[in-house]
Image (cartoon, rainbow, N blue to C red; front, side):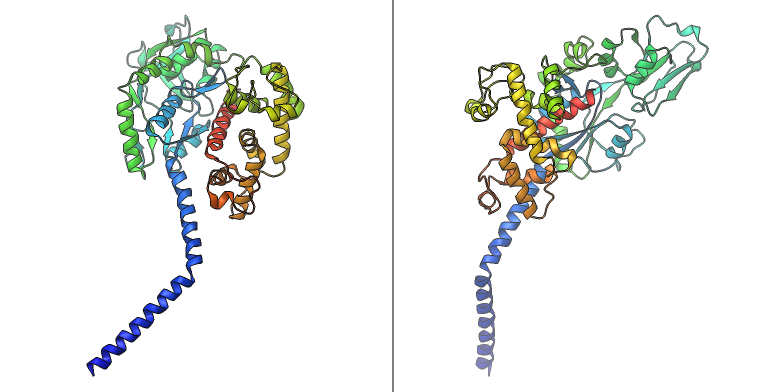
Length: 455
């Protein structure tokens, strides 16, 4: 009996095993497709997790435009961190204090660069980085003002200033009070001081150093508060990343590079500050007039052209680049010939030809993409050629994503370096290493958005 029982069990198990083998063999194709899908999704996830997302407040000394280039104390620190950690840093610029505060209390970004009074927030709500620097509040007033001529001293604070003030060291300390101005920036208050509509304002010392060269009638008064650290707000879900960031900050502050940045941006003797930020007429280069004329003629924003030129040539007129690209617009010879220029053409002729080409690219995408996204597609096409961008849009649509949004299309542009994608039937222009163009667009558009904020 036992032999018959074991034989029956063996037969049943063998049949089940055989069925599983047949099933697996028969579904090999589907299994490979699933595996390929998982790999592609993993690739997308890796791309996102490799990038450190940052929200940076548009702020004197931290982020501004100098001779067409984006610079600033925190901006330069973030770019140095990008190099040292070997991870791309994507920076979003914000100008509204309320939005920044909400952002700081959310988990939308890996790093939020914004100064506000954090003493009332426990570690449950905010994860702070190691200090990047220290500053303190100072009084700003008109030169030759006499404090004792007033009975009441009202200090106006801007929307971005929340740190506790201390008037105990000032004469008539009991007569000082603070008026908050939630809709005004530090620069707005400086203008009101110059116009004699207010008598005193407060800001952090590093901001005061930045702005004073452009308000000759004003002066930095006494310190009216304690030193406080300037820290980043970190995403509390990213413990491993946060540890890496904090360890990097600690090490970086010991370097000569860090000291150079402090001297460059936080010193009253700074060459950069005394010549870059303020209320004087804004220019990106000596070619602004012709760029404005050409852009107006062809219907696009001249600052896009300025950002592209800076990215391509740093405004160096006789530059010869990789593959024979030439001049201030760095056009390839075949494109230059189409628009009637060569490496012997004048700067004006090169800019005019570049304007025609940018207009051509605008016309390709104007009715195909979200209007707020147009310049992302145009700058990407200037770098890669429109064919590869159109391929990426086709792939994006095929896989169920929004082909009118650059942040979705760019992932498929990057994937065009993989055979499964560049050999797809919707692709017309074949293989392309899209990562370079992705970085190019990010840099061009970050600079362009910085130009917009400057005016």
